[in-house]
Image 1 (cartoon, rainbow, N blue to C red):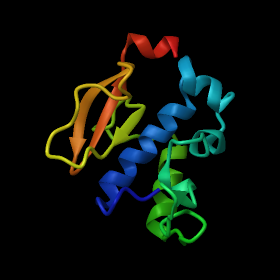
Image 2 (cartoon, helix red, strand yellow):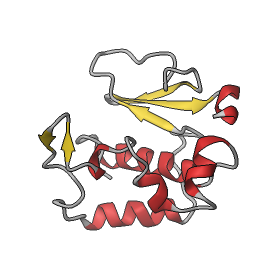
Image 3 (cartoon, rainbow, N blue to C red):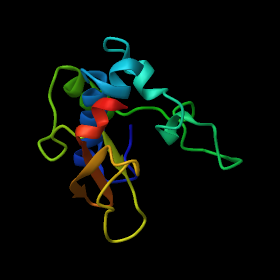
Length: 134
């Protein structure tokens, strides 16, 4: 999954978040992954724009149905599936581009995630105690 032109570090960070969700032992993502389904995590409604053919009523030309993965993207996917993760992403379960210079302190806005780091334009959030009750 490409991360808005932010290179292989960004792609590794997103892959790390996806695998953190797949391997979650509690909360929403543990239920969604149903024991480790990457497909369930990626296709969870409203989570990844690349799985949507339209966004806000407009055709999304950057959806996974129109893109051909490169060898680098396959390599990063294999790397993540093998259990690797980028240290910058740690145990993060969320990322987002705030389209501004600073990251919000929490995301999602229900307080279940707290800011961990920013990689180029994307903010990464780790779970709080509240997440286990989601």
